[in-house]
Image (cartoon, rainbow over all chains, first blue to last red; front, side, top):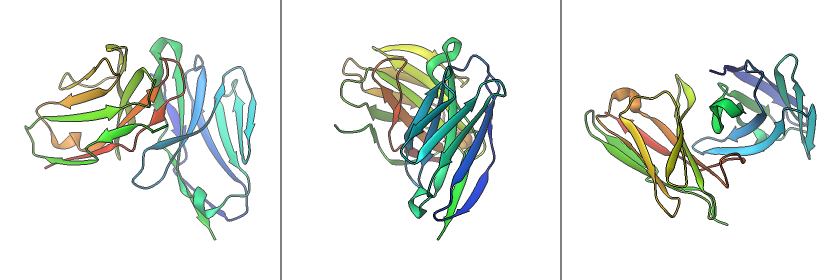
Length: 113
Length: 112
C-alpha cells in the first residue's frame, strides 16, 4: 500500500513562514490533502491538490506538489500561535478508493510567540 | 449546516466486551468512512459505506464491522475487545464516494 512520510516536529517563531514536507510512494495518487488536528479534536481539512496541479494557494496556505519526486509541501505564511497543531498529509488513489486516505505520521507544529 | 457528529465521545470498556460507535454525517452526505487513530500506528482506514453498502475495507480483522442506515447514519462495531483497540475512532463523511471528506470529533475508546 501507499507509504506517506512526514517529519515529526517543526518549531517556528510567530510571524515567520512554516513549511511542512511530505513524501509519498504511490505514483497513481490522484488527490493529496492537508489536514490539521488540534488537541482533543478531529481532523480539519485545510486544502487539497489534484495530481495534475503543481501549486495551489488559499489565503495564507500554499501547497506545492512535485509529482516527479512524489513530494508535497504546505507553506503557512505569517504563522500564528493558533496554527500550533498536528498537520497530516494524506493521499488517495483510484485503485484503493477515493475515500480510502493514506495518512502520514503527522508533523507537530509549535509556534513560539 | 451541522458537522459530522459522533457518539459517544468517550467510552471505557474491558477486554472481551463489544462496543458500538455511532456517526451522523453532514446532511446530504451519502458516504461515511471510519478511521482508527493510535499513537503507534497513526491513522488507518477501516471501511467506507455508501448508500448502505460497504464500498471499501482496510486491513483490519473481522472483529471490526460496520453498517450504514438508509438515512446515511453509520455504526461501527468492535467485538471481543483487545487492549490494542484503545484508540480514537474517527468518522468522515462526503457527498459522494470521491469528494473531500469532513471529519467528526471522534470517539475515544479505552479498553482496560
